[in-house]
Amino acid sequence: MQTSILRSLKGHDGYLSGEEISRALNISRAAIWKYMDQLRALGYEIEAFPHRGYRLMAVPDKLLPVEVQDGLKARKFGGVVHHFDTTGSTMDEAFRFALDGAPEGTVVIAESQSKGRGRLGRNWSSPKGKGIYFSLILRPGLPPAQASMLTLLAAVALCEAVEAVVPAVVPRIKWPNDILVAGKKLCGILTELRAETDRVQFVVVGIGINVNNTAPQLLPEATSLKAATGMSCPRVLLLQAVLAAFEKRYAAFLRLGPAEVLAEWKARSATLGCRVRFVERGISFVGIAEALADDGGLMVRLSDGTVIKRIAGDVLL
Image 1 (cartoon, rainbow, N blue to C red):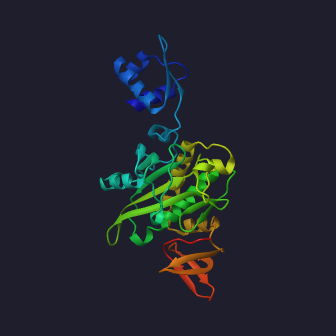
Image 2: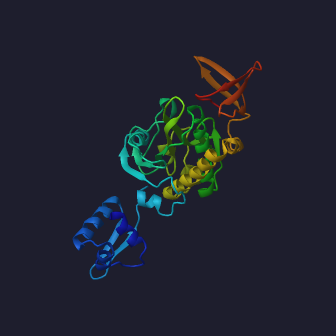
Image 3: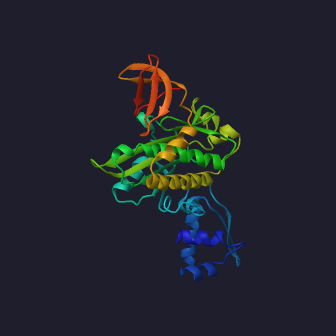
């Protein structure tokens, strides 16, 4: 009902009388007052004027379900949205929802996280209202060995969304899961799954984007869209673009296979052709990142001419 009242206010120029709301939604005037107070508590500025009614004056800068879904071009991704003002980790929340049977495309969003995490146990800084921190539930029915492609797919979709919303920046992908702008980290991707021997039950893809973070809120190796352009970015618009791009890429991948994702990833790579270093079993290796394998592994030529494949882990440029 809260959402219905909000959409009524959004779709009406000027004041909307309590009588009109009551008649359209079949609720009492007392109930309208209650829902208006709830909307104001969420940050919506709603003016009430005697004998004229209610008028929506301003919308909060929050990734609330109704804001994400209104105007969303994705059909499945974002069909169900769970929003938290603060939570430990959207990954943990999404994993619990997935275990309970949440449908594919369910999105879990937080304005801030107290225990946001990235790969290899790293923390992800999640200042309130500055970035986009969300997890997406997928049920692709793939063999577990193919699940790593979803990380590459997410990276390509993120780049496409950023390019569409903020054309001034040029995002690049650092293997396996970081999006860089001018050599600094803008986005991170974390993929976790529940699988049987031959089939993935579900995948949770977690994405963190530094959007309107200021320089003091960022680590030296990180950047944000605001830091890169000097201008604030509409978080709702960017999240909608990410969901739409991800859904489109995901559908094509399930239908046609990984070839297109691999080609787009290579076109945006910040790793291929570069000198990289990685550590394996306590030993440091240096080589040239030559190619991306069909399974998403990174092919690295060492100084002695040996070519090895990295399936997981981390590399430094």
